[in-house]
Length: 307
Length: 284
Image 1: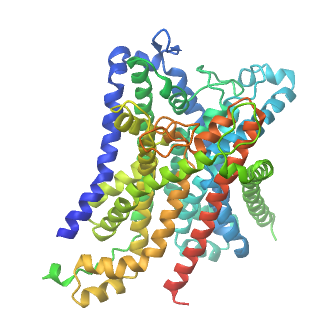
Image 2 (image 1 turned 180 degrees about the horizontal axis):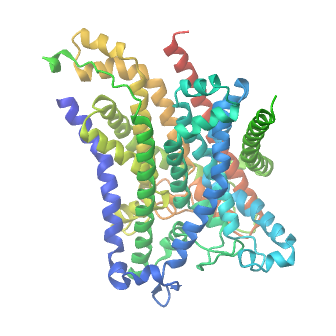
C-alpha cells in the first residue's frame, strides 16, 4: 500500500501540471476576456500600441495552414504507412522506418531554417513563374514575397507526414493477419486486400490523422519563420499571414501592458483548448480501435495482497 | 483472363505505384533538408564554433560555446526534474494500470504530450518568471522538464509492461512484495530500454526552441548562473536565422548541423539498444 501511495503521489505531479497549465492560462487571460469578450475573436485589428486586440486573423491562420497541411500530408502519410506495412520488401523496411522516425525527430528550428533559406525563395520563384491569369485568381493573388501561407502549409505538411504515418503504421500493424489472408483466399489483388485492411482500421487511421492535425495546430518555430507574420485573414496562398502560436512567440517577451499580456494569454488558452479537443478525439478513436481485440490478461498479484 | 480481371490487376499495380510515389514525396524533403544542413553546416563548423563566444556583428568567426553550455545545462536541469518523476510515474502506471487513477494519469500524460510547446513556455513564464520578474535558466530547464515528463512516463510504462509476466510471478512466488519485485526484478530487466527512452526524450527536448523563448530568453555572454537568462543552441540558431547578416546565417547552419547530429546519434543509439533488448527477450 505504501508503494502504491508513494508512486501514485509522484504520478499525480503530471495531473497537477495539466491542471496548472489550464488554470494559469485562464487566470492570465482574464483581463482580456473581461475587456473584450467575444469581440476578441470577431474583429481583426491587432494593434497593441493603441490597445486594440482582435484575434480573428490568428485563428484563421492557424486553422487554414493546418487544414492545408493536413490535405497535403494525409494521402502521403497513409501511402507510406500502407507501403511499409503491406507492400514493402523486407530488406527496405527497417531503413525506411528509421528514416521516417528520424524525420519526426528533427528539431522544428531546423525545418524553419531550411524553410527561410530554401523553401521561401523556391515559393517566390514558383509564384513569379505562374501565368498571369492564374495570378489574378483570388487564391493566388498578391505580390511575390515568398513568406506566405503556402510556405507555412508546405513546411507543416513535411513535418507532420512522419508523425501521422508512424501512428497509422502502428494501427495497420494491429489489424489481424487473418483479415488479409481471408482477402487473398478470396482471390483479392494486393490493393483489394489492403482496402480490406484499411476499412478494418479506419477508426484508427482517422485517429492518426487527427493526431497529426493536433501537431500542426501547435507548431510554432518553423511556421513563425516562413508565414510572414502579417495579421490578415485571406484566402490567397501567397499572402503573408499569421498564426496563434507565432504571435505568442513573437510578442510575448515584449508585451508591455496587462491587456496585451492578457490577449496573448487568451490566444494561448484557446490554442490549448483546441489542441486538447483534437488530441482527445484522436486518442478516443485510437483507443476504440484497440479495445475491441485486446485479450484481458489475468494479472498475478503478490502473496500479501492475495491473502 | 477477362477484362474485369485485367482491370483489377491494373488498379492494384497503380495503387502500389502511388504508395511508392508517396514514399518518395516524403523522402525528397528529408534528402533536401539533410543536404542543405550538412552542406552549409560543414563549411562553417570548426573548433571555434565549440570553444569561442559569439562574435559581435560585423566580425567574422566566433562560436556558440555559451549556447552549447546553456543547452546542456538546461536539458540537465529538465532531466533532473523529469527523469525521476517520469520513471516513478511510469512504474505506477504499469503496476496499477487498471485503476481509475492510473487512467487519469495516463490521460494527463497524453494531454501534456499534445500541448503545444509554446503554451508550455507561457505556463512556465507565468509560474517561474513573472513572480521573480526576470528570465532565468531555471525557468528554461523547467520548461524542458515539462516537455520531457510525459514522454519518459509513457516510455517507462510501455517498457515495464513488456517484461515477461513470468519474471514477476517468479519474484512473487518467492514471497516478494510488489515493490521488491519491481525494484529487484522487473525494473532491472527493463532498465536498458528505459535509459534509451530517456536519452531519446533528452535529445528531442534539446531541439526545442519555443518553450525557451521567454523562459531562459538568450544571453550573449558566458553565464553559468541559474537565476540569469541563459543562451541555448536553439534560440541562438533562431536569432541568427532571422538576422540580416550572412556570417550569422553561416553560424545558424552550423548550429543546425550540431542539433541534427545529436538527434541522429541518439536515434541510432536507441535503435541499437532496442534491437539488443528485443534479441534478449526472444532469447536468440
